[in-house]
Length: 234
Image 1 (spheres, rainbow, N blue to C red):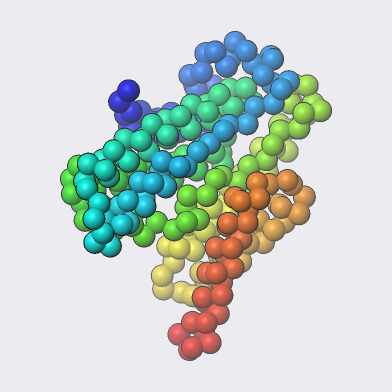
Image 2 (cartoon, rainbow, N blue to C red):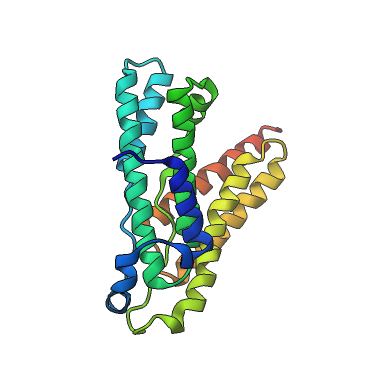
């Protein structure tokens, strides 16, 4: 099955902004049952990690055939399509936008768009950007599991949506900090804001250990690096 990245982009936008337009007919039919059981999307990053790894190896001059990279790209597209479908099902059952998941899917999509340019157009800049992809970019999204003690989920929908937006802000702050290359003070403030938001959320909400811990480790490393630069008089 050929996966169209442009089609995936439209589907990703719907789960984040317009859940009523998400196409998942079977999940809509089964929603009364699924809503009581609780639905959380099962996501995977095995194939996209493999793609990034192979492009990184090729960029370092290691012996990686182009057909192997192309095969890894096709596999990563199929994996992204499966992840989008999983989030669509949860979006329909939960009857609410999946903001954090949508932002995460968008990041995975952007990596694949760069990979397409690197492979099909032999874009050197795109290949270099993928090779420099940080581990934090490939972590699973920060999510909150729905409560199972509320039969229809409506009582917790509002608070869940607010927390979802708060968690989505963590990755936006990290991205803004990574993009700041001139002012160390502003970069530090963005990193500190991301860390504080994540620590506050994790103190009251059961978050995925790897997703939360990986981001906290990245933030600590980046803040420590700024400390060293400032101590050196930069």
